[in-house]
Length: 110
Image (cartoon, rainbow, N blue to C red):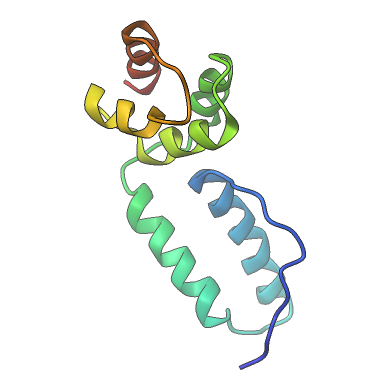
């Protein structure tokens, strides 16, 4: 195993991760090389969790318009919770929220 160093880190949505992996996969295809195990597994995971979902960046952007922290927007966009309790759990200790905010988030995610 080759040790690798993390150069930078940034949270991204599953949709962005899928797009990024497509670019990486294309580079490996051009070089006629097989995808590394980690990349292949990540790709497989993203296919499973996104099955039946539209990759809609508009959801993420609409959540950002509510002045939510980026990390919270990413979690909400990745999970797409349908009930108030899960939304509140994601917001808990990260955002001061009201029932009105939860309703707005639920409307965006519907």
